[in-house]
Image 1 (cartoon, rainbow, N blue to C red):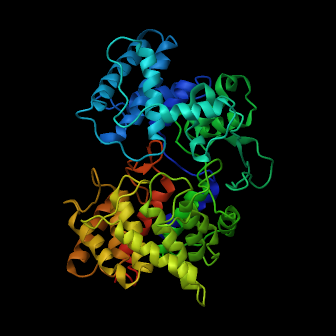
Image 2 (image 1 turned 90 degrees about the vertical axis):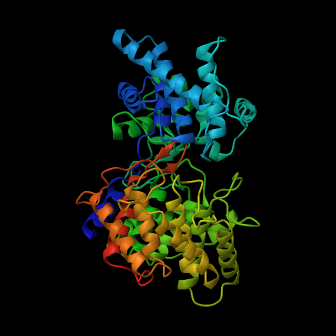
Image 3 (image 1 turned 30 degrees about the horizontal axis):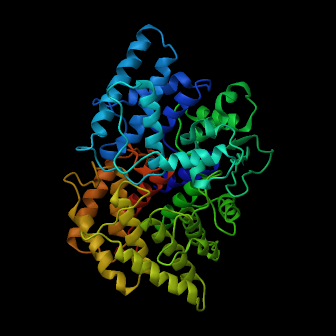
Length: 529
């Protein structure tokens, strides 16, 4: 596992934009908005190949709505461009099946609850309106999900059309604004460096001047901002960004790229927390330090500053022996908890667990009293305990799996929650032990390597997990996990579980969690016995 970890860390330098899986939603938006962009035919093929037997796209339940809307609208747009012969028939059949799936998903009596994902309340009404425009005034029009309407979307479009600014977090989903998104004057492209490093805060990398720029770190937002003019200006920085993203995959695109600081913080902290003895290049440490401004860092250029990326970067730096005072997190403090970003609608247990990690590790390493940090640690631990579910797990708005949220919260409470958190950690351990599958895996919908890694880390990094039951569960989980990866520690299958506009896989982050679990299972930390 050490060799695989070295390879993983080297990849952080070799691929500074990061690695994220292709998204049906985002790829569909490029098919619809930018047929002139190279890789178009590959994107259409990707959508056709990803359609499920039932006509939908994406994961089960409410997770299917957004990708199914996007793919159906995109293929309908392609159909209207006049596809020839057999291609026309294939597209028409796919669109009809997509519409049938959507009518079932949007049926008020049977529709599943929609997950808390970024901009879903804007994306769904926008795409439904576009699809209904193709359908005309006849029967079979799609209904907006219960609790949603176009009011908020209309306000955003009017603001952009008037030249007013919108919050940075909305720029990531600028495509929902339609014509108002095209060259919106208050939306500024964020430059991206062309050298081996990417600075999310300054927007530039070392070496040559930036020649690419992103709109909200989103290919769809970039295509929407360019509009039809994007076809005629190949040297435009946002066009160059789109081509750079497309060239990495040959066509399909992720929801967000670059994700430099996010990826590096999570990978390095997972590896270090697990105790894997891997050297980290000084460049990576320096880049993380450089990324942190007075209010922290975004996950990547064009995204809003956020407490999650910031706290994990700070925690990783502390584990690497390059700790910094985490005072850049104070702007995210509310009267009850820490928000992901200011103006957040909702709250995230994992964000607060990561802030607890950053503050707790700072207190552990800095001598002398720090009353404000000590008080915050107590409040954060209490808030996390209050948001634990009755069965012992946590659920979060940034990941589909409770095993991720439970690992984040239980490990933070184990390390920094004090004696008052012992029962909460014990409850998490009991829940993990009680939900292991017959094959030794763990998972929300099915057993996965990623979720099994989180469950194993919960058992192996907490003192509450001890005794024969724990040892047996760890051994079964280890056997499953070892059988689910290649000899380089790469999972054979990585279902998308992370929340963005669509579910996605941050590939290096997931690999780091798995490598950490495999290492811990054979080299337990003192916490786990």
